[in-house]
Length: 116
Length: 116
Image (cartoon, each protein chain N blue to C red):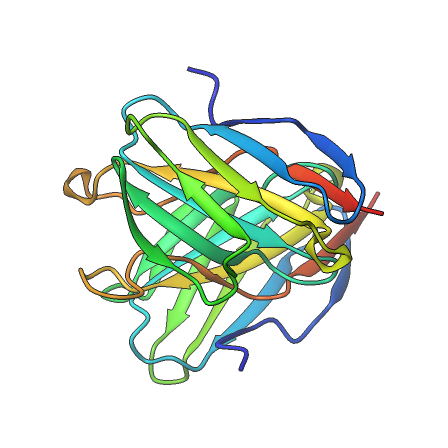
């Protein structure tokens, strides 16, 4: 297994367009997280899945944002009607179940979104 | 409100010497702490973690110290190598079930430069 993968790596879009990002977690990691990182800041939590259930959403996740993990494997993050303030690095991370005694989250390379 | 603080934006160290990166937190509910390393255009890479029931954890050249009473942790890298040059993020989480658990709260990062 090569780790968490994200697609695309870069996305340039015009304001008002919709974009969708994909994350493939490490296989058998049932917990999946989305974070957003802007320049000069650390990653900020957006949302969290345990298998296919979306258990938490940050207040950063406005109603223009939606995330899914329909089969408990890969996840998608969609942003509708993009705004310039959405420009950021979108990071996906996955983790083994806590029963394994580990809590580390493993990150993908991220998708860099630029809204023009 | 910044719950995890890394007050030094940057640090320069000579190759072979010790690098000490510091992190403070304000939320006493945090009970698991992690350090991540990040190169430009890549996702964060997990380095080392520590539970609140310990005060020290070592992994090769990396040692993390936790002072719960001071709400302070530090990462020591000995000896420092040029390949260690990167941005280092401190992160914290709560490891119990309930709202906000398992999501990572990050500091803003410290850019480490190891000079050959």
